[in-house]
Length: 128
Image 1 (cartoon, rainbow, N blue to C red):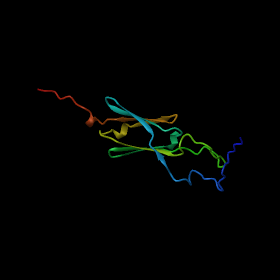
Image 2: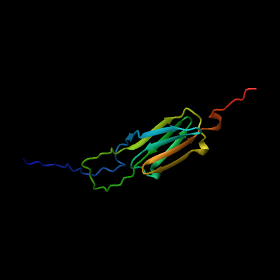
Image 3: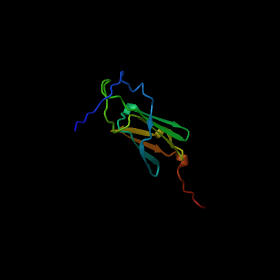
Image 4: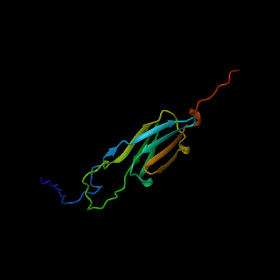
């Protein structure tokens, strides 16, 4: 039996800038602690300079874009991870202290610390 694989050549290689932009919703985890929320966002292939975090009123937006790491002549036969950027929108149900938000990324995992504002923390009322 003779089996052949035929590869179809594109006349002009398509670059990332020419492709329509697609987004994936990344996997994320939220942990509630006494004075803050910790959010871990998993975005494989996204470096520190490819992360954009925006806070607008009661929503936080996280975007991650991957760098083009292949040459113009490289053509994939099979792609296990879709060639798309990441976009996540989370609604906040508690006031966050914007000045104390911390973010860091390592190996495609973004760690966000969202401190709860002093006014939104529970208080104990003394009874007289």
